Amino acid sequence: MSTANPATSAGPTFRKPPRSGLLLTGVAWIVGILFVLPVLWMALTSFHSEPDAATNPPSIAAPLTFDGYKAFFDSGPWPSILNSVTASLLSTVLVILLAFPAAYALSIKPVRKWTDVLFFFLSTKMLPVVAGLLPIYLFAQSVHFLDNIWLLIILYTSMNLPIAVWMLRSFLAEVPVEILEAASVDGAGLARTLRSVVAPVVTPGIASAALICFIFSWNELLFARVLTGTVAQTAPVFLTGFVTSQGLFLAKVCAASLVVSLPVLIAGFAAQDKLVQGLSLGAVK
Amino acid sequence: MTTVDTPARPRKQAAAPPGSQGTLLRKTGDWARRAPLLPALVFMIVVTQLPFLVTIVTSFMDWNAYYPDERAFAGIDNFRRVLTDANTRQAILVTILLTAAVVLISLVLGLVIALLLDRKFRGRGIVRTMMITPFLVVPVAAALLWKHALYNPEYGLFNGVLTWIFGDNAPQPDWISNQPLWSVIFALVWQWTPFMMLILLAGLQSRPLDVVEAAGIDGASSWDIFRYMTLPHLRQYLELSALLGSIYVVQNFDHVFTITSGGLGTANLPYSIYQTFYTAHDYGRASAAGVIVVIGTIIIATLALRSVSTLFREETGR
Image (cartoon, rainbow over all chains, first blue to last red):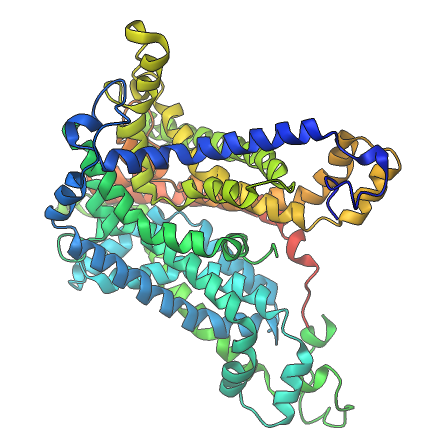
């Protein structure tokens, strides 16, 4: 189908001259390299010794070392990484448990005014989180719930639930009604229909929603910074400790940034196509 | 839609022909249909709407944590102070500038790159993967990377490259001090362009190719095809990515906090509210500023949603 392929191109008028194709390919490669370069630079710097990391001009060929990583892991990041894992995973599970039935109600058997409900969910994403932060802080303070990982789990669930409902709804809308009818005729109840008929069909959709929720929870900073202290601190909050650090810790900062980004980088690379569907709330297939 | 808006009562319509689409709907009542929706709905109302109500109440109160005894009703005092405050006005301006610049630049860049990647060429998958990478770096980490490893005037990569090219007399600008807002904007554009590119690329690939080829055979130029076929097809995707991008960039906190700490005139509304609340402990003013942000967001979002809802219009109820 590709117009660039002369064998299938229908007419000679539309065949692109090969030279411009080569040029565009070159431009695409250069743009791609430019975008990934800062990350590569961060990776290279993280393997340099501190004096080599902070030179001008840059010392690309400097000997590689794990000192930056050692310094980072010696600074005690594990509790915060563990908190991030807990908060992200548990809130993702909660989101899917809540969003799946809701999306089912909104897509397969629409309730009245279903578009209104759907847009209500999306509108909560537009409420700037800072506007709700103060009451949450005061409430948590009064019931001694500050610096508790469950507070973050609940807030991350509310942060990602609208996205998940939108995404899952669009995936569920593709389940053929006939299958549901058949299940209904066979006497399957709601729970059984969801579990044995609908769930298998939309598993890819669930996976993509879960991936997006995990990434957003993992990345979140504002709630975590305001509502946690020493006990429930997450990895991004741990990283903000480097905001004021200067000069000689560049390799450590780069190592820390890379380690904290690693779960998202791996998950994102592994599921590039799902990422698109997820990011566009399922609107783009 | 009709079967949805006027759901038939199960008993009266029991004689309906089996196998029709209505059968399933008729077997369960209204409540059975609503029940699965309720947990999510209740959860969202409790966790997001109730706090906001408290914010509205607090915005009418004189309440500073440093003076807990002086808590009192303040009327519209907080709003007056917030709206006449030069710093808040600056923060509003910064928020608008930052959001508009980041969304527009990354949208245009994303479109160009999506068009580049919409062709088959050697290593397309690799280039796409490289392009996505910025979006997958944790925002705080990305901001740290730009601040320390790239922008730093003494050992950052940018000035290092200048030294490479021009030697010892190379200009060594202090990027963040000279252009604080643009420093934040560029770091954000780097992170958000992949997002725009991904959605637009998916939009491009959903374009019916046979029509495009037919236009090519009929002698339409590449520009004509782009202008009259690709761009109209992409409209919904452009709107969707602009809307979603704006939702996130308006609320940006991580980059402002990390790169400039809100200094040098780069404090946007989320950051300045964070400061009013977290550093100055002026709960009343912070709440008033929060309410103003929400009103502004609702106005913009209502307009934006109206255009984007076309994307979802085709799927009506079943």
